[in-house]
Amino acid sequence: MLEWQERISGNPQVCHGKACIRGTRVMISVILDNLAAGVPHEELLQSYPSLQEPDIQAALAYAAELAREGTAELPLEHTV
Image (tube, rainbow, N blue to C red; front, side, top):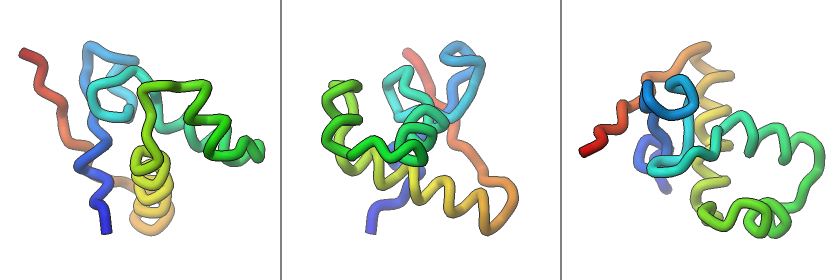
């Protein structure tokens, strides 16, 4: 099973440090909002070409972790 930390990170210089898919500006909250609104995975992947199916699964795993623990340690993305 994929660990969400492999695909999700935060960078203070990107989207104010909000959780995003690593290397993108696609915030996890945007993915979850779309899924909650009933947007199919395929449509989400078309709307955000940088996303892959494992990114959606990582977003769901991250949300589950937050619901279970109340907080989750977000790995920082290091820009070169």
